Length: 156
Image 1 (spheres, rainbow, N blue to C red):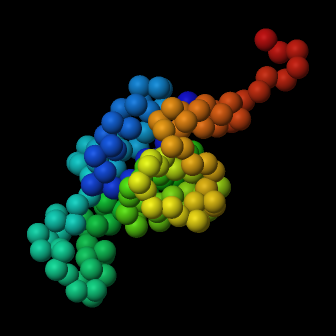
Image 2: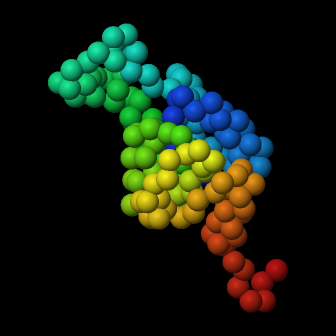
């Protein structure tokens, strides 16, 4: 079974259900909303309740706070740990950056989209585009088959 980094958005209401579906199928899943360290997922409001009114300088400065660094480290550790990325649409810029890093690191990235999502040409850089959970599970099963160690001829 795959170790999956699920890249998506806090605003995507389908994210928790997909985490559960993948885990129910035996996959290990990094859940940015509930990371393994047990302190909850990162939120800008932890740094400043008025974060949506930040200037560009304030945003840049906030990235160096211990809270932002801890959130980044948690998610980046999850990305390094995973052997597959699933990009669940709709998602924001961070999820696309995560998927891009995963692809650049040579890890398969599968997009899960549905009707009504805006097309994106550069999705051709990724490993596959699934339009249903069933199709995504097929992609992951094929990935597992390709990466499963093979027994040499004559072994039991």
